[in-house]
Structures are given as C-alpha cells and as structure tokens.
Image (cartoon, rainbow, N blue to C red; front, top):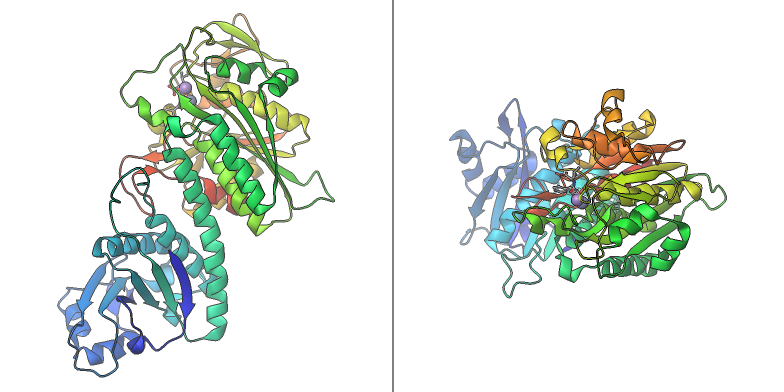
Length: 504
Ligand code: BES
Ligand code: MN
Ligand code: ZN
C-alpha cells in the first residue's frame, strides 16, 4: 500500500472514496465547516442523516454516500464516507489506530483501490498532535490491511493500493510525511514478525530464521553473527543443546547488533526472543489437538528480529543487541529425556522434569550469554506458558522482572502502542516451586502460577543484571480478528520494543 500526502481541492479529487471525519461532543455529531461544504452540494443529506440518527459519529462508524450523478460541476469523488471519530478531543493513538484499521478492513471488502482522507484541523489536540495522529493512522492502515495468503491461489480479499492524506497546509504535509515514514517503519516491522509467526514449521527452520536476521542486517546496516552447533557446544550452552538434541534440523544462535552509541558501550539493551521454530513438546509430547499452533513458538524471536529492522532505521542513541537461540523441540531416539540433568552456560545444573518446558532452557543460555557480553539491561520475550492465557486472557501480556524502572518503561511503551502489558509479582512462595532434589533448579514448578514459576526459573539466570521478561504465549496469535489485528499472528510486542528502545 502506498500512503502519501496531497494538497488538492477535495471536490476536484478523483477519488474512489473520499473520507470525511466526523466529530462528536457529548455523543452528538458536530458538523465541521468542511463537512458543511459537502452537505451543501448534497442538498443537506448529511445533516438530515444526522438528525434522523442514521449517522451518530461514534468511534468507528462508517457511513457511505454514493454520489454518481451529482449535478454539481467539478465534483469528482465517486463515493464519500462519513467516518465517525467519537469526540476529537478524547482521541488517543489507540483509538486512531483502531479506527484506521477498521476503515481499511471495510475498504478491502468494498474492493476500493484509491482512498483519500480529508484532514480536519480540529482533530489534533494537545493530547494527540498531528504527528502522533498521522503515525497511528498509518499504523492502523498497514496493520489492518495485513493478510497471510501467500500459499493460497486466490487471495481472501482485495488490497488497498493507495491512501492519501489531503491537506493543503505545506507545514502539515511535512509533518504528515514524516509520520507516514515512522508509522510505516513501526507497522512493517510488526508485519515481518507476523509473517514469521504465520509461516509453518516446514517453511521456517532455525536456518531460515537466521537467514531472515542476515537479510535484515544486510538491508539496514546492523551487524549479525550466527553461532553454529560447534560454537554453542564450545561455549557450554548445555541447556540450549539439550533442547536441540531431538531435531534433525541444525540449531542457530542468532546475535544481531545495532551500535547507536559506540563511544559508550555500557549504554546497551539486549532483546532476547524465544526461538522455537516448532514445539512438539519433545518426549513430553503435546496432545495433537491444536499442536499446529506451535509453529508460532518463535514469536519472541520474530518480534526481536523485527524490532531490530525498525531500530536500525530509526537509529536511537543506544546500542541494541538482539539474541535468538533458534531450534525445534522434537522427540526422537536422540532427544532429551525427562529427568535429564543439563548444565547451563552459567554453570547452574537443571533437572529437565518436562521436555515441553523448553523455552526457559533456551532463554537461560541466551541470557547467560548476554550477561557475559556485558549486557546492562535484558528484556526477554517468549511464548512461554499456556498459563499466561489462564492468568490474563489474550489481550494482555504478563511482564516479570527484577527492575521496576525497566518494567514500568516497557509497560508505558505498551500503552502507547496499544499492546497491553501488565506486571505479575515474583513472590517468594512460587519461587520455591522450582526446587529440585537432584540439581540446582528444576524446569517445572507444579500447577499453581505456571507463568510465574517459568519467570522465576529465568530470573536465576539473570541475577545481577537489570532484567524483565514478557510472556506472549496468549497474545502472539489470535483466533479471530480484533482491533488492528487479523486472525493469526499479531506481531506483538514488536512495536512496543521499538517504542521502548527509542525512549531509552
Ligand atoms: N510453547 C509452549 C507454551 C505455549 C502454549 C505457547 C500455548 C503458546 C500457546 C511452552 O513451551 C510450553 O509447552 N509450556 C508448557 C510448560 C509446562 C510443561 C511446564 C505449558 O505451558 O504447558
Ligand atoms: Mn513447550
Ligand atoms: Zn514452547
């Protein structure tokens, strides 16, 4: 989709669909001077639709008006849409992203190719300036336009080709153009993450995922280093190696670096993503029903690699490292067995009580590696526990950690991007549940607080460094469309990671 700005006269715009934004105050539609002009040429149609309550102006309402034989000279839009925005002065980035995503979903059904949005001065407020308005509008357009149909002979729906912000003020156009750029970088990164999560296991091996990281670095100028089996073995990553044992496809340890503040190496953040390209459970095999969803068990890895794509374009003044220990988790004659004891990179021994609790094992070694390389802050993202859905449903991702400042800045970034994150405590009661009789720690923690015991496990490998962990097991994939998501991969929390890194 091509998104840009233009300053032509709206009546003279040869648009398939011209959109007018409608404001409300106290749940009553308010006709702006711009809409008034259209109302005049339409013989008061808009006004009467409003007074008959056919148009309310409520957030996300879309009313189409066809204008085929209008007897007005030089009026070229083929259709007009009155787009309800709710109360302009209450709009947040999330409202706007939501509205533009529903808009694009509707427009796709209409099979319209060229759409124009007439800007309204009064839509920008102190709360939401033109810059933020245009960025979130752009994000909603791109995210709502997404579909994963590359393996279908016929696509599910049409695609919007061209979207134009109409604004005759040159200064505004500059701001909007800049926001289109930034919004596109944010949204396209999230779409890369969606594509990777939606890609099935046979099409995305650890090597394929590593190739994506290499491509991103070649295109955007960050560095990449792929460690192979022998390197990982030499480093002593026994926990990661144990998980990879059962798979015939070689593991890849992906490490990307963006140097935004070369002269201060301690000004760094490490983003670590779980990278299980397929999680069968291993010898602790999962039940068959729904197992196909485990193609998305590299959602954390996808998010951090995708965030790196955006970060290396937006260039914040900070050194960003991305790590993803990528492997399948498979059963085989050579697979890791329940009861095995492995030695992690940091020297701790782990009793592998359940081979399906594999994510925390790979994260343990990735975090150990990051610490060794001088990480100041670590944020890991993982589709870690089914219990995350039990605790919070699929609209909120739980976050855990040992640094309240770090946790709060991630939560705040998430509230701007609309990717809701909320903290759960690492209490001393659940901490005991990872106790092992035979090793330093066990990779399961019993029935209660499954997401928390997983986080406690990881925390043992992040001691002495500022660390937080987001569990995206529930939010990474959806069963049905919602907001700016379509069923399937959400790409969460890619945009939050970008926002968070920029704010650092
Ligand atoms: N990848 C799964 C978690 C998951 C579940 C992600 C549902 C997405 C949707 C993880 O590796 C896993 O299997 N976790 C187990 C842990 C248990 C064995 C302690 C779980 O949640 O059941
Ligand atoms: Mn598992
Ligand atoms: Zn898993």
